[in-house]
Image (cartoon, rainbow, N blue to C red):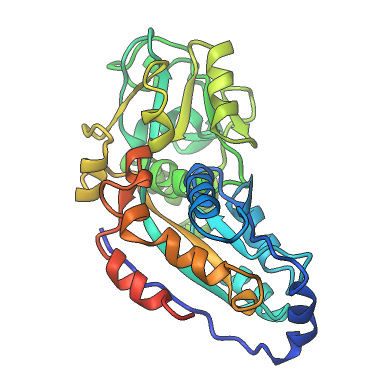
Length: 340
């Protein structure tokens, strides 16, 4: 597992002085973004409001890409200060930020795993990425041509899996979890199953088209996008007991009375297997701070340092108790954000 350093995008800020001035009339930190990071941010915001003289920050969800879009809209009172994100900012988003006078500061605070969970009273599952690709791909390569996915049960995909209908509830495209799910599960499964090689043979070696084909998912009801947060996924499992949901590890660990978790490639997800790198579907968690609002919005610098403190984000802190895998390089990040 690689641990990227906190990065600061360096963009010109002189043109945004008017926006900065307008932000001074707001005294409450405004945060939006990832539903995975949302509970962690709520824990920190409540503690920050209780333990400091600053107002409790306003924290909203909406998904990682939504949060980053809102952050990059510009500078000023009507724009957010922090975007929570379970996936990394794209180059195109950084370009939008730059065009609007925004300098996003990337702050990683820990790690989380993506898990696959079902009703606690149902059968147990032991998945591989190939199983998920074979279950959810819109089309599969069969005897030299692409055909509509014929699989209707998990047993159709893999005879070792339960004979249970494929009813998958996956994060919508606005969620950072979806990006990791596509890369580490669907695309990895396409390659693992041999489908990628077969598709390349069919399409004459067009790698971009082959990847696009791998990532195209079913629209026949077997795969359902969830645009809301994990509570919506859990509600769908309540109404569809044969369903399989995609969650963050921390959400699962806080709902073990209702959910059972599947293994992936023989590994059970846990804070230990994610920290060690054994579990194959994990990702860093971070938030992006608008540099132009530091020193303007009261408490913003203090909030960032509070969030990253050993007492909050370190081992044994409230975030770890909720399910966060602490960042082994937390001390380096603390040093980098001090005095932003």
